[in-house]
Every structure is written in C-alpha cells, then in structure tokens.
Image (tube, rainbow, N blue to C red):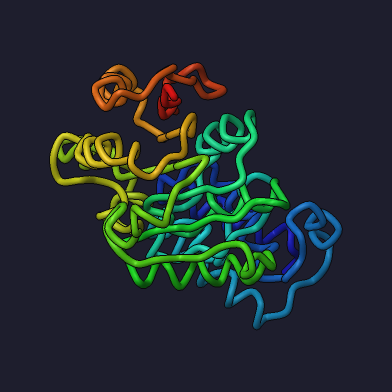
Length: 283
C-alpha cells in the first residue's frame, strides 16, 4: 500500500472517531512512523510502505482514534520553534503560551523563576532566547521534572537551568533567591469546567496541572501574595490565565502591592497574561 493510501485510510478512521483535523493528524502520524520530517512527507506518499510499517501506522491511528494526543504518540511537541519532549506527566505546550514568552522577552532580565514548570518549555525557551540568563523551575511532580530535565539536556542548558521539587515557592530560600522575572502557567481550570474539556486533555494530561479542584484561582492567590518576596526591585511577575480571569488576577496583583498591572491579550484577542512589577523602594 502506498503512503497516500495509508493517509486516506487513517484519515477516514479518525473522521469516524470524531477526531478534529483528522487529515492533519494522519499525515503527522505517518511522518512519525516513517521517521521523516512532516514537511517532507509528500515525497514519500507515492512510495510503497512496508507491511511492518503499515501495521505500526494502523496501531497509532487506533490510539489517536481513542483520543490519545498526537504529542503523546510521537513523544514531542513544537513550541516557539523548538522541539520539546512530552509525556502524560506534563501539559502539552500550547501555542497561546507563546504570548507569555513574547511578553517576557519584551524587557530585559538576567534571572527567571518558572513556577509549575511541567515540561520546562517556558523556562527553557526563555533561557534559550537569552544566552546570558539563568533560571530555576519548580514543580510538585517528580515525574514532570524528569521530563523537564530531559528537555534541558536536549537543549544543552544544564549549566543555566536548575529544577527543584515542591509546591510553588516552598523549595526556595527567600534570603538567597531573588529574580528579575517570575513566570507561571498554573492550573486555572475551575472544577465545574473540567467536563467541557476535550478527551485529549481531560483523560491524558495531568489533572493537577489543569485544575485546583475549585474555582481555578487558588494558585494565583498564592503566587501573587508571595511573589514580592522573591522579586528584585522592579522585577516582573507574569502569569498565564484563562480568558475570563484577567480582572480577578489583576486585582490580586494590585492587592499584593505590585505596580503597573496590566492584562495582555493573545493573538485571538483573548485575555491571556497578567503582568505586574515589584515596586522600586524609595531610598
């Protein structure tokens, strides 16, 4: 069977299973099975595919039909132009999180703290974009930190990125640690919103990275209240939010005496990031 016929068969199976963008996913999965870059797959579509690879392709198509995310089948996901390892122990890096990256890079920084680092995609991207910077990533999940460390090593950032296990600021010594920039993409989905998530997210991504089992704002209450202790004068706190949470989180930052608080929209015009500055002290 030729590659084009396999793609057609895989697409039909995914359409039958109700998978969005079935044709795109079938092509990505065939490229993965053939071990070629997705952009070069067209060159292989007229070719006969071995029986062994056909069986492997059909197997991954069936897993995708069961709504296993493509990234979990291929083991990686593109984010801000780089490839990151992902597993079921971490959130899939999402395009909207690049809004946080762009906003962070808009001003200089030398040290960065990433709270709830997961795959490490935010911290490691910022360090890769700023060759003179160092940073720390914190996560409660030891399994997530193993993924983050693998990504760190793949990007050759072991000399500039450290990872600590624990809840938010708990692993840090507030006397020794001060950062120019603190970033976080915490669990912000309210418990009553979980049922509305896609099966890919609801069943295959770590629940504690998705929801606080409450109103979706618990992490922001901790982060906003404590961030000032860990920021240098004028340092920035930036958090990703759900599209309805902008004003609530902005008010938390104002209540924590952060200044210059503002909400930043993503490319779709939805509230996506809240930014605040640690006030400069009057000498």
